[in-house]
Length: 164
Image 1 (tube, one colour):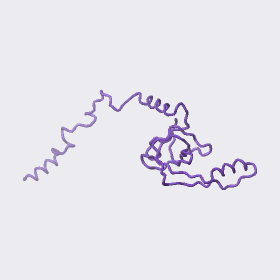
Image 2 (cartoon, helix red, strand yellow):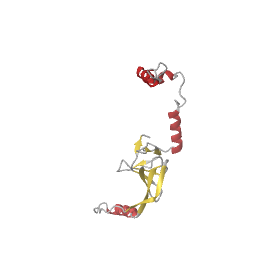
Image 3 (tube, one colour):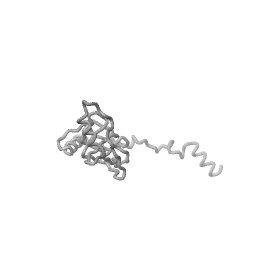
């Protein structure tokens, strides 16, 4: 046999293959379980809770809002909308960027109400006329998560809420 045939014969027998080698050791055999991993902190949840409470200033929140695409935290202190339970509003946010070049105009509701609710609803519809909103996106993955109005109140509609 020539050299190429010898090499081919050795590989076929498993002598050169790492999966058949006597020196191959599984990952489990290499891990020393007596040493705690550096990234493990048993008090981390308690530390995180203290941090969140400090950021909120003692206020309670209806939810903690997260990006639906990458689960990045967007808001720690928000109010749930009275009628649209999947919408939230907030004044203080994190990990959000405002798309100032993308303005959305809101023309208000054009539905007419009966005599019973005419006074207050017309005033409210009139106050919504001509409001402009800017799109708000997650600063990590750029997913659109809501809008911000002229009074700098964020309105979130594309978020994942979690218990606060």
